[in-house]
Length: 502
Image 1 (cartoon, rainbow, N blue to C red):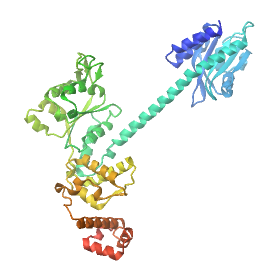
Image 2 (cartoon, rainbow, N blue to C red; image 1 turned 120 degrees about the vertical axis):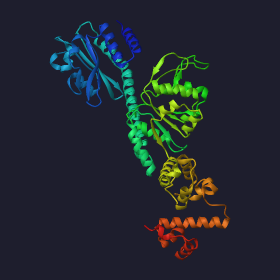
Image 3 (cartoon, helix red, strand yellow; image 1 turned 60 degrees about the vertical axis):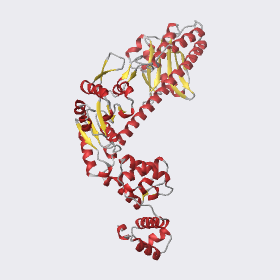
Image 4 (cartoon, rainbow, N blue to C red; image 1 turned 90 degrees about the horizontal axis):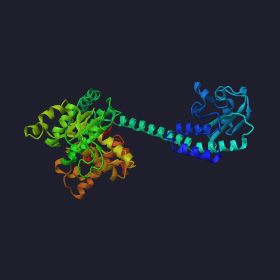
């Protein structure tokens, strides 16, 4: 058969293959069927062990042995070291390694050849073939054919290596992301050491390892979603999906399809089937935020899922079973809603299995400074700012404010302060005006220019005394004034320098 016809058949075999093993097996099969070899194998290297393992083989006697050869061992191993083809027109049995003898079979003499699959200077594999000796065979033509075949095999083998590298990189990134998630939402990263927060940590630790439904209660901004994430990522479902749903953000007309999905053609615009949030959360956790905003109609649907763990997609008749842990959260008084007929009593008792109350920030003031420092460092890194600490007067303002927006409001205030701060220290004037001037916050009233200058002067002196641990001489040098002058200012403003001594 003409070389061109053989190459055409090999190309067709490669094009119709879906895996590398199929590519190599079909190539050897074409070569054997066209009489170009009696037996053969294609070996690929193991990057760690430096051994070559056969991924495809042709010939009846080679199935019963381990198709493995070490670099440098036998004719194949020597070809692997040199990267050059090796052809033995009349080889003998005693020249071969164990693997090569399997290709050899019972023959007394034959032509044996090894063609390395080369990508520049890198060896991607070995094409090992054996043919009976024949005076009619044109060895030069035969060699040219196999060199062409070895070149054709380089690309699919190279693609396989690239695919394996991408898969390994993807797996590594997936492991890294999961590790970061576990670190980010571990108990150690929940900020707060107040008595109230320690109680919450204990409750989270108790319920995390179970599949119990959890109801998180507390004002907006108290960190309910963060606690929900901590429960999930410290549970047995930590490697499974964590699906968030803000019930108040989804229009009532869409909430059923968002929860349970829909079938193709269920309504205008439903061009294909879509999975709902519960189906996406299968084997994992679904977090239903603002559960008190659900309509009575949706509450009925949700109750069925909690009871039977099943539902139907919109426009479909198939019942779908799911294994989902539910964590719900609300900032509303569900008991009042029940009395008003706006929240189902049976759903309430389904959700209120293990309730955790998150106190407002004003009720755990000992955590304010910890949280402020945490957010300061977080946003200093994020925005590449050199901010390192918060001044004493700024801390006083943070501590005296009533924080109606809770932790979320504190985080926003600190981020703003980091952005407007051009120094290493957040001062009181870097904080939002609502904290500095609002009457309800108990902060400074409207002042004259003289009062404002004196207040700033007092703040700078307090900051310098804090840095010098109450040493007036060092504080004076930091401010560029005399010790006598700082003594006068300390007396004038009634500053107790002793409070800064350690």
